[in-house]
Image (tube, rainbow, N blue to C red; front, top):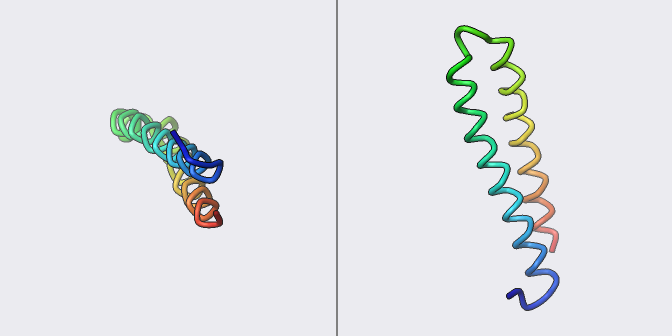
Length: 66
């Protein structure tokens, strides 16, 4: 159990990063299957992955603000 609100918030932010990473794993699988035959499917998903990287960076910066 977290000792305070700050610790609780950091745990929640860590969990959100883990969820984003897990989602990225699923996207990787779809991208791999469709990349050559259907780039119209894989390219938007690659863009999502790039956005994930940026989102994670913002979350990590926010965590350091505590």
